[in-house]
Image (cartoon, rainbow, N blue to C red; front, side, top):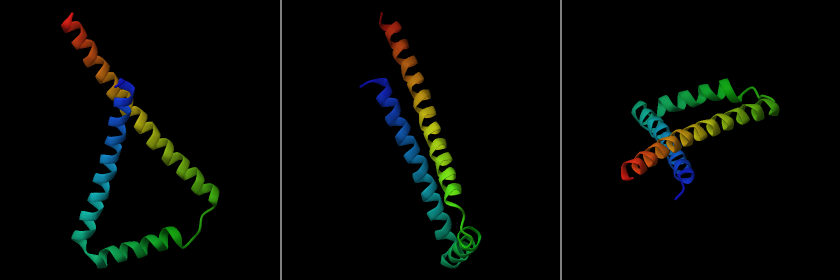
Length: 97
């Protein structure tokens, strides 16, 4: 396989692992705090975030920035992994011949 594809696969898996760990951490937190604490937090979030609607342009801009951030992280991880794999490949080539 090409190094580009391997590095992008590793990058996607890394981001998936990060989101999985984040989700698991939230589940563990709310499981430990209990239903009443979660319901109080959800009620407070509704009052703070959803009771007063925001403009559609605000939401679109916010999500464009979030997606760009995730894309930059994805490409950054892929670049670093590709550089590491290239360095390992070059090192093994020089060691062999």
